[in-house]
Amino acid sequence: MSAAINVDTTARADDQPVISWPKITATIMGETDGTLVINDVVHPCWAPRTDVLRTGMIARCAATAITLRRPVRVEITERGQSWSVAVRPDGIVQELDKSGRIVSTDVDLLPVEGCCRACGGSNPVTARHCSGCGTAEPLGVLAAEPYAIASQPDRQ
Ligand SMILES: [Zn+2]
Image 1: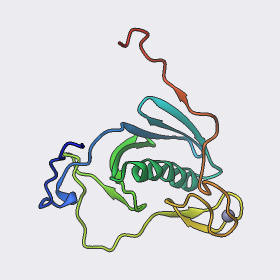
Image 2 (image 1 turned 90 degrees about the vertical axis):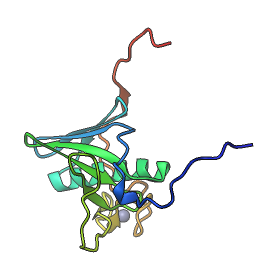
Image 3 (image 1 turned 180 degrees about the vertical axis):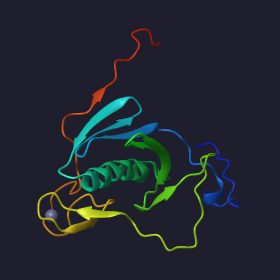
C-alpha cells in the first residue's frame, strides 16, 4: 500500500519555486573548462568552445531533470557573474527570479540544442543518443570520471 501523496493540482508548476535539490552548480572557467557539481559530486568538463561547454553542461542537468521528472535548479557562474536557471526535463532552460520561481514569458520556448561531438549533427539537450550517428550522450562534455567531494568521516 502506498501512502497518498498530497499533490495540489490547482497550482501551476510555474508558480512554485524550483526545488533546489539536487544542488547543482555549473562553473565555467576560461573558454573551455568547467565544473559541474551535483550534490557534492564533481564532474570535470571540457569542450573546444564555451558555447559547446555550456550546452553540454545543460545536457547533463537535463538528464538529471528527466530522471526526477521535474525541473532542476542550476546556479551558473561564468566570468565572475552568477545567475540561476531552471533546466526542465523537456530541455527548456528558463531564468529564475530571486525567490527561485521561473520567470514567466510569452515567448514560445524551445529546447536547447547543440551539436553532436561525433558527427556535428544538431541534437536537443534531452537526446540520449545522436539522431544522426547514434553516439551516446552526443552533447557530453565530461572530461574525467566524476568524483565525490571528500565527505565527513562521521556521517551516521
Ligand atoms: Zn552524431
